[in-house]
Image (cartoon, rainbow, N blue to C red):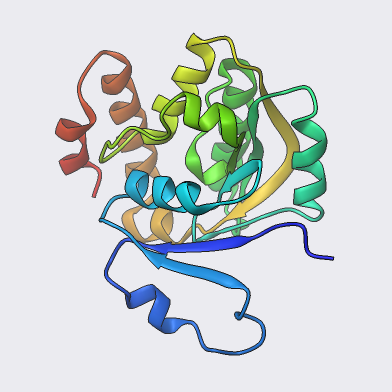
Length: 199
């Protein structure tokens, strides 16, 4: 018996939705469109969800085996969480970046969106969901969770995130850019000013 729902939210008209066929594999997927922006898309999906648990999965990220069971177990005594990070690449630098990101998340309890953030729905709505930011909406949500003393769990199982964007832009460039942007964000620079340097 299916005890979960899959909601696909397209923030770019219906271009992504149009790629899905009407095959039996996709018939149970709930497909909606929203205003542009990752925060808008995730909030739109959360709004129509009937589940007590929300999982925000980026389109280029794969979950580990038995992810739903792992999440359900984690949220028995926690309020939110994410997985460790890995990339679909054997590049030693990307493997190192993933390891460092996972360690950082465990220490700071501030996972990023590509680590498949999950959260209890009532907690998500208590915090008013994702703030409508062009960047750092995932970090902002985690900061709010920590501010109000909600419990965050980083699971040791890894999601697999596409390395395509890293390889296309350059691994060193992307790493340095991300470090600079997150550092400026922590120093108080608003994400709207940072977003133009992200792409």
